Image (cartoon, rainbow, N blue to C red; front, side):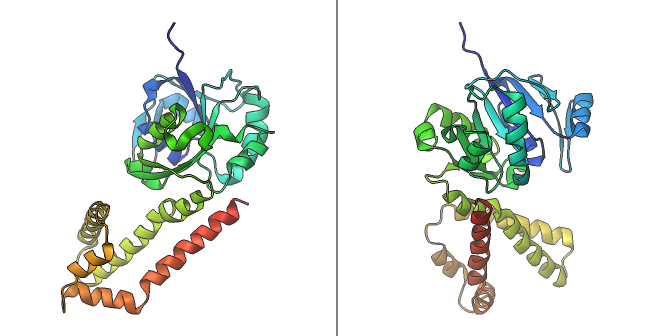
Length: 292
């Protein structure tokens, strides 16, 4: 007899959950459940079977079931739960919906949390003594909406073997559908992932905005400036992945007495590298504070 497919459960269906839903292989699951606290959202999804957000719209698949959060499910240790609510809402979700209403605690579905700063141990405690080894933390970034996210993953090496186990491969596949996925060996390393790639898009947008403003001041239209800046950053990022010594590459581009050299000189005088390091360190510190 053919093995039953897994069920997949979304708890919360905001922008990140929607991006994951859109990218994932929906045919790999028997059913996909969307459990959303907002009656307005569930009613709209039920009525239209379509997701509409600020950037796009897409249809829900036939495998997708939209339910109210009072429904009861018969789940098994074969299924996957994705906790996609805000960090501040994780405790309430775990202590009320999950333990009391949705499943028998003797059953241990795999749980993936995308709530920043909430550790696997904390989630296990909220669930009344759940096995923390069956909980994975994921830190995607907002580039997921374009399918080019960078996601850091952590799960107990006994179960997931840094993504090499069968369960690890399934979870890697989920997040590879929205970009690239990278497993880390220690949960504390997710604080660094948060500070670099989780918050990173905002750093780049900040720099982009400054470059666009400068271009407009130099006489370019905003639309032309944004296109120039965006494509320059895309190109630099793509080529930068393969450059082993970025400092040497900067020297190559900075011809003696040329335009790039003048710009880099200003960066050095203003200690831009130090400012960026301090900003990343501040984000890292805050991530660690949130995990306590």
